[in-house]
Image (cartoon, rainbow, N blue to C red):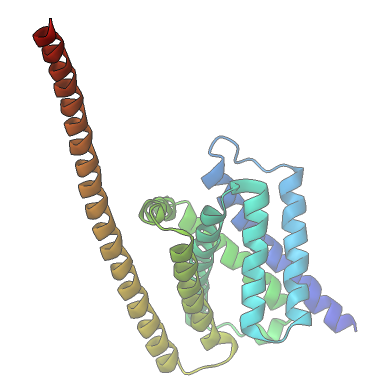
Length: 253
């Protein structure tokens, strides 16, 4: 019982640092002039940090756990910070990708130093969370992630709801399959192959969306040009009608 409580507590504290990173990024992207933490921010971090380990205990299916955690983050981001569902979805998935990159860097560093984390379990959960949050924050402070996120927002501005959903699902699949190599001990070649196929499919869908958008813009421009020409013709016809009416009145006179 005590071991289970200790594991949950260490997982909670480690998760709290990662959630702090998420909230700091949300505030930075949504309120550039108000990035200081207040009491509400700490309470939100506390709630999310309590829910995440609880979901891991209650639900055993890995994919469902990932999806539920993403939904929780999206909802908190949407209702408290961004107030835009599309921006919230993109922001959470983007930061999740950044966390994954930090996990890879952390795993490489642990491998190079040759540290056996199992020997310090369950404190390893706490150390993992703190160090991954620190690495993620270090990457974030380079300002490159902010620029990439702004470019992604610009690209997706023309996307409708259906496109956002499809793109988000594809990115989420890549994130889930990437982490399965660690948690489910999948063969890295299989994971890399599946990720490559999904990425290629994502690129294909994006190209099709771009082509469809281009054709739509082209047709819309032609339509606007036609409407403008018709309005000009209507104006000319109205002028000729007035001139014709005046000529008839002069002839009658």
